[in-house]
Length: 304
Image 1 (cartoon, rainbow, N blue to C red):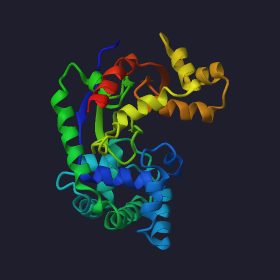
Image 2: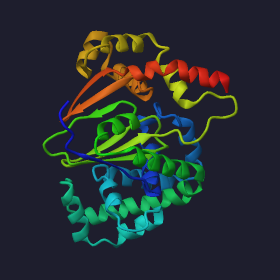
Image 3: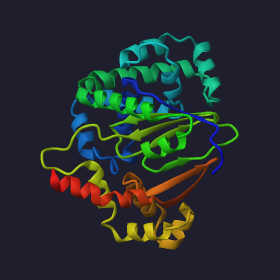
């Protein structure tokens, strides 16, 4: 294992979760694999007019390549939703481009207009949905961030990252200097990353609300669901003791790329595979600790 030459930091502010929930709502390709799923999307749609939905979709389409994480990370003051958006709206064109340049962002010449579109859409989203969410979600994410901060030291960066993301292993590169991990709730169980030359922002999944009375924890449900399918068991067997690329898994299993992609998402959500990310290449291997933890999880649930 090469020495780690990047710093891992933990960050959280309500604006992160506002942006994550906004993206979760609008990105249809994720709805089928999110815990909240299509039912949540339909419920939220009832609180928005067709005109508001259209403007939000237009803002998403126009600003898709302009990630807000570098701006949230650089915001020096109040990072509540309104606090951050007020700060963002007050940035001059030069200040907007200066922050983008730090991360080598590819930005269009109309960046101030895109900023205005994104800000307006997020204010609508905050008014009609995000400001009314259960505050236990925000409090739970804040506690999670503090817990990860306390775990971190100069020698365990990769381990903390892998544990938080349920199996993503991030290898050093010549350019990578900083990794920021951000707990999120709305897009569970997905883990998403915004990758720049020197910085990676990773939002990882957190089950911050307890299950209902007598119901199994989400972590146990994901694990048992992942193990209940013949194809997924075959994939785990293939990954035992070796690393394979996505293409190699597709070839060995003999199913379509979309089907294998879905199965890998399910296995990743359960923490059953390690995702080896190394300078824009990705391999997969078996993550045994998730299997080893299954008896304890079942025992704890039965005893509860």
